Figure 1 (cartoon, rainbow, N blue to C red):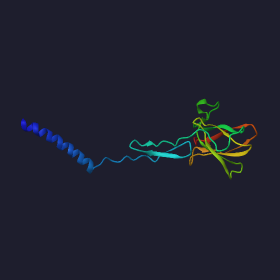
Figure 2 (cartoon, rainbow, N blue to C red):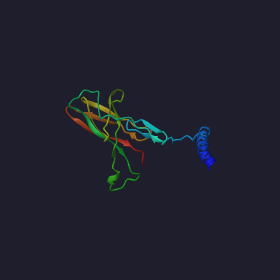
Figure 3 (cartoon, helix red, strand yellow):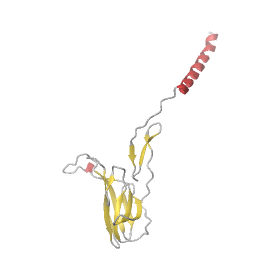
Figure 4 (cartoon, rainbow, N blue to C red):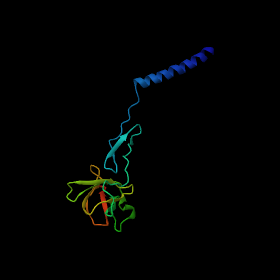
Length: 173
């Protein structure tokens, strides 16, 4: 019986060392994450990583801001993502209405050759940017394929904020 009492801890010690040794010889299989990518509101994409294959966080989006001096005129509006349902119905289903989409917007001259400024919408897709009187091309930045932002021209008149809705095509058909 005495030998058994001394032998029992030795067995546990040996089995623990053997398990640790086997882990070194045959390490656990590495985790392989899928090649999926998540499109971020600023147009960049992040992949899956880590032991749980979770998406990396998207870069922070700051509220609408501009390098253009403040004034009494500009552009206000929101960016919307749609369609959000694969089949459109008549009458339209309110659950399938376009949804707010936070995004990076580049403001260019009307001919699109010169960048004036760039800004991010807020998390609800809304924005207000001060601009002097003139015609501008707004280019919503999007992912490589979808959602695809649709450029739009806006005319800013003195003392007025022109309202625009920027559309992002979700690719759902």
